[in-house]
Amino acid sequence: MLRINIYIPENLNQRLDFTAKYMQKVKAEVVREALEAGLKKIQPKSTSARALLDLAKKAEKIPTKGNIPKDFIKNLDFYTWGGKKRE
Image (cartoon, rainbow, N blue to C red; front, side, top):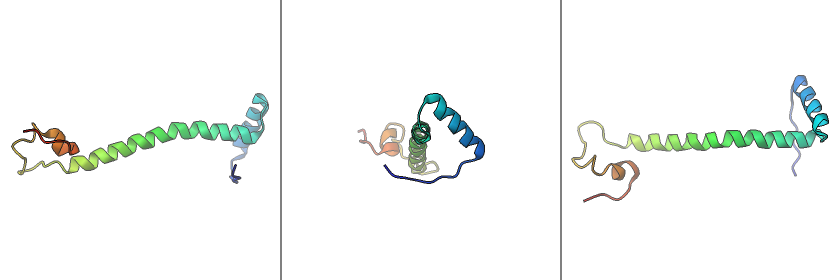
């Protein structure tokens, strides 16, 4: 395990003390569990955000003015995602 130092407000420290005593654990273990639970909530959102940004970049490549191919609707997957073009 790695050791890190952080600064926390006094009220958070009091809550940490209370929680550690209530759960009959040391403060470090409570902090690790809380950090793990918090990161699990954050990480899926960042993955979803990345997917939306990738989709927006691909949407920018879709022709929108004047130069729309005649087979655009038929080959929407090709123009959007780079899939196979239909005949």
